[in-house]
Image 1 (tube, rainbow, N blue to C red):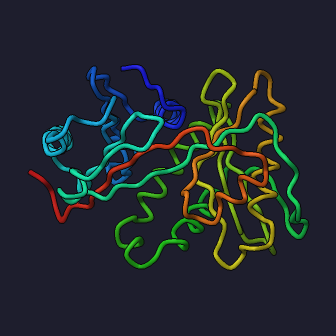
Image 2 (tube, rainbow, N blue to C red):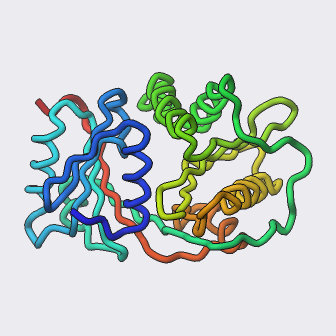
Length: 265
């Protein structure tokens, strides 16, 4: 299956490079991350196109047959436009649409943050990112996403760093990690931002815009680099930050997700 969406193509490239397995089934891809089964977008099905009317439950059944022990369903659709998800919603799945944004150069932030240090994480600082991610989750999220799950994600990303594909960066304020993001080479000169997060008490200070700009400048200075890609929630506050830095929306992606009460089988 040839992936047409820039978002899914860069996602799959990063997952493969960090240790996930991708199986091509012709009309869809199966992505598995055996050492982190709770990673929803590391264990999912990517459809080449949305199913025909009446086909949603068949797709969900196919997912269940492949991922028998998962406590979630996660299905993506490889299309650059929003697709009709009504049948999936009626069957219990939540649909989300994200904007895929690209830039070939960045505009300097209007209000750069100068009160802390911005640099790549060192090898002994990855637990600080885990703590930042865990702290950002509500109680329900902390119950669902354990520290072990986040540490497994950190180990996977460290493989990308060890392979020389990019870095995870952080903003340190008074010695504490206030924000973090990763950026990695996905091939053909395209660099993808991953897991951008600013601590809730540090927002509104220009930290995110300064971090994203600094990382983008670093990536674009690497040999062969030509494009930056970031994915944003269209209703979230970060999307306007990205627009002011020069990112423009080039496509949308559709994600379908459902938590399950226990094992399917």
